[in-house]
Amino acid sequence: MEMILQQKQELSLLMTTELRQAIELLQLLTYDLVQYVREQELENPLIELKEAERYDTFHERSRAAVSGYGGRSAGLDKRAGRE
Image (cartoon, rainbow, N blue to C red; front, side, top):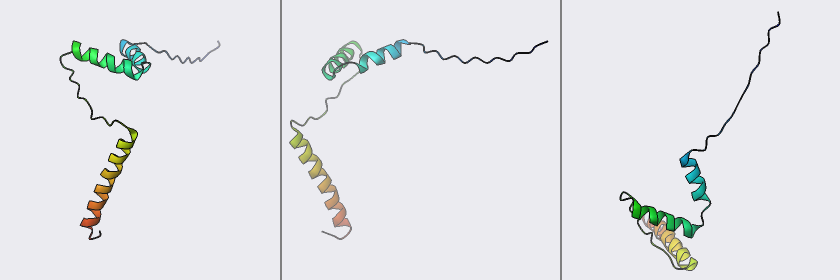
């Protein structure tokens, strides 16, 4: 009498609706994604968009970041007794 031991491993991927939607959304351009989100906001009363404050140019963003950082460090220096 001959005994045989076999082992089999199998992996399968189930394409769910959520996974399919995620893949579609990841392929959208920024403009198309914004349009999609706005459409969803109109269809779903539970979605409420808040518009982010925008900076017009890279220069303004840089200046805001630098002045914000400088303000924090200056405040730390004053509390530490340095100016």
